[in-house]
Length: 487
Ligand code: DUC
Ligand code: ZN
Ligand code: ZN
Image 1 (tube, rainbow, N blue to C red):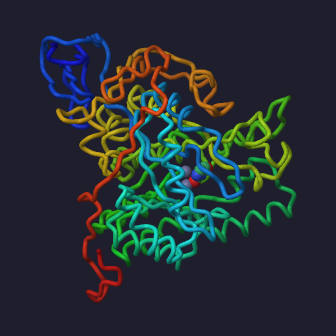
Image 2: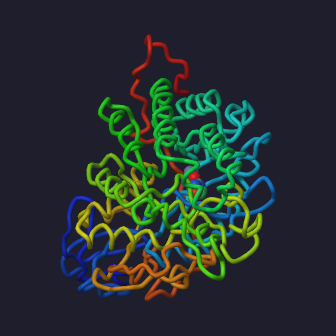
Image 3: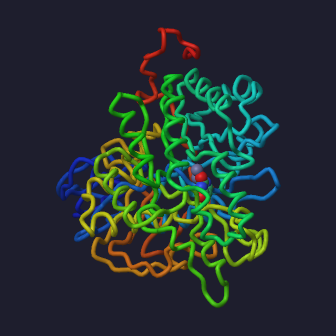
């Protein structure tokens, strides 16, 4: 019998801390050897001239989420797996929604059943929209026992948004169970106030979405989210940071030693508010809806500042916030009509497959970040922050053999067909990138080669998460009084 099931031979292997030319030996879906001229293998993949990267870990994407109105996010676990593999991502942390007035258990187990139909490895963030005793006291412990390790809260958005009292309750519950809280930071009342005024003034086109939520509403909510987390002594991650002033709030807290991390997404590095001002003869100003997400993309000067925050390490994860609403169908962006005011157009843009190519091309190729930073931002850091390391996110002996063979020179023009997602458009249509995945391996199995995805439906594995060091509270408490002692 061959010593290895598979050897990836002669590639340039990239880790968060260095790059080296070596073979990778795989047995039973795991990396069992790194070295030169590894021997006998049942299968050999030649990687000469290619980079070998850890499979991407996308710790923020919306897949098959069930909404209280009965609708379901258009990207399914099966179609999302194809898109992820096409773009070099092998694991995701996606969301289960709580419906207001309900507990969390029913939706959670249903979502787990749905997750098991895909091919991607997956874990969940539980969204809390109703910080009730039923959800946080009665039902949460069973979900934690199942390996749930993160909660998500929205400080804006109907019907998801939590007020400060509810947010504090979530922070306290997370502290008791040693979980991470991830936060969407924008000020609910400020956005509603500006939106009402804009609509009254007849300023309803998609571009006014960005006018309804300038950076100050993000900065204020980021400041508040951090301050309350500091009060409770609970680690948080601030999602999708779009601007320097919000990132500065994170930097200041990090300098105080607060356990707060920041994420951004490719849309805040490549798109601007002007994209929402686009129109075309067929769709008119509705074309702008393709780029509508929250927080809003800003401008090129702000993009440069967000890159700088990545280089400084203030923001240490780049995820997609992949969120599927079709543009041409009638259930997505156009659900309320193609001339609906911006406030009625669903937010969110797809980006699961585009994340790695865009960050590599705009980041590494253009000299804004190093190759090692690219790997850290897209795989190693999200795996570590989400409690998926050392199994995921790096190329180490003992880790799952989630690998991407990457052609650093390949030039590609992004089209929606290349994204292979269920969504009927990509906001990155026509973007030219250098660097593209030529093969993706999930647990040692080739699941994508030259754009062709082949994987058994239902072969994705749920990733239970145990407590991990980053989530240990600092025990810095006002008056030394612990209002939410860990269990
Ligand atoms: N913003 C989010 O917070 N979630 C999904 C879509 C979006 O734009
Ligand atoms: Zn969000
Ligand atoms: Zn999101």
